[in-house]
Image (tube, rainbow, N blue to C red; front, side, top):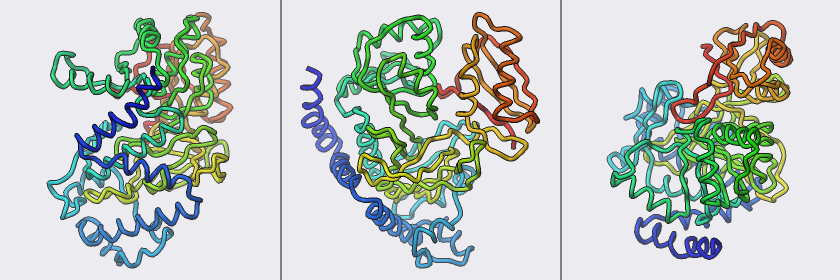
Length: 451
């Protein structure tokens, strides 16, 4: 029955909704992206540059910010002749976007755009505009990337996601429920998750019997740990997609043990939606290079000897408020491999998390949250942990103790962390009753409060 609905939704209901009712071209863009993913890497690079060159010329003609900024640098659009030239342009940060918000609008698109606001994990939300075509293409890129993991439109999909808290009787809430029902979705609110509510979440999974689960990595991990600790079994989906936060290998293993199915990593941000995702081979995350220009800039060496860079993005189709070389605050590690799946889209080896969630050592190395996860792998009697760096030579470690937590446990934590941060860092341990998720429902393993 589920296969019949999926086919009906994909070939009848969704086309009717998107093309006829909403008059959007999402399906046409999806067909384009499903074809272009199989181009070889050189063809994709050429396709991306052609799109990027057209966007650069548009910015020179119509966007006051770039006209002024490039004149200050003594260049014109004609001087940007190659991807290497483009990579030498200044990057764009959130403070700069807030300061030059109006100046970043294309003259011909004023009053014709859609707008969103980022959640503002730094306490400074940012508003940005985008065109209708850009939005349609973002949906298409999302459906393609999710489809690699089996999360095709119309499949029974349970979302453990951030859901707005509002009365279920409000017209907007009723409309949302009907919308999700049509898409064959069940929405569980990650904002309300707690230890006491875990049985209810497990009951809902068993009631809905999803083929796919899409979830924030933090709440998903928390539920997986509860399932393993309690011995509770839930309906086994075919696949799980982790989103919204960095997913480290050790966390993936815990989730796969709890749910009994493969976990796929995806990566996106509110400003552009899906940036990269794993295909069926899970050899890295394919960047959507036929839709976005994804660069890693300001690269530095990690404690593990690999080069980590700041994720820098350009939406190739947002002609309304183009954000060229936008640094979104995330860190990632590039890959020099080609995926065995045959897709020509380049790979990111892994997403290392927010720049704000990357610790630093006195020796000058970056320490992504992944290293903290591995340090706690063999530490018993700890339910949850979080590491905060307020001084370069000190870490404050909050831990939620479990049965058997002792002075020996604390000594082991110090010993394991010292393996990755060195002996020059003081490790201060603080037992606490609980560690709260952020306002967006995400859980941060590591937080850096250094300037």
